[in-house]
Length: 210
Image 1 (cartoon, one colour):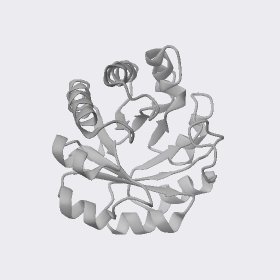
Image 2 (cartoon, helix red, strand yellow):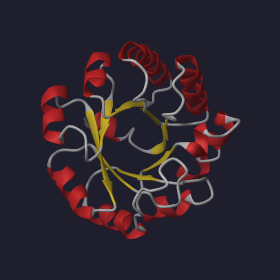
Image 3 (cartoon, one colour):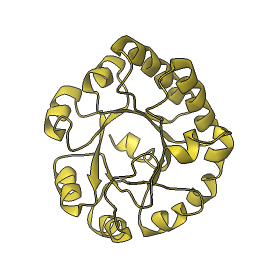
Image 4 (cartoon, one colour):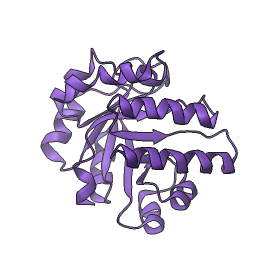
């Protein structure tokens, strides 16, 4: 897993769950990767399993081509079938310990911790490979999500030896302060996939990580 740790940094692009057309998703992800995305998370809870499986295999190949990391949102069967790099879990999903039993030690497991440092501490102790806090700014994707404070990132950087993701309303203009506070990755949905030129939108985040 240490080989993955150095890859858990940079722009973390999360696909728009409202876009379910496989070819469109694949094209959008390719543009995000060309723009510099280092991690791709696939979110789709509406399409049938076979369609999602086909999409995931294509995205896995794409991310390999760009030496990026491919994460699937909360679907453990899809993660196992495709041998994706990892899975991201929220509070209503399978437990971290159960996921680890099924997926093994070499699969990345990321955990949503919202605005709670205690969840981050627990996830770290249980062997998560990264944790995510947010939302930090008003979000079109999840407008009702709880608000997280910058202090969470600062504390995580000081107390937890684990990569940290910030999520929620992040733009190229406001993301810098999150990285300064301690975020290793910036997770973005609308700021990339909601833009007309996805590649150009992704490129705007590059200077933040240099």
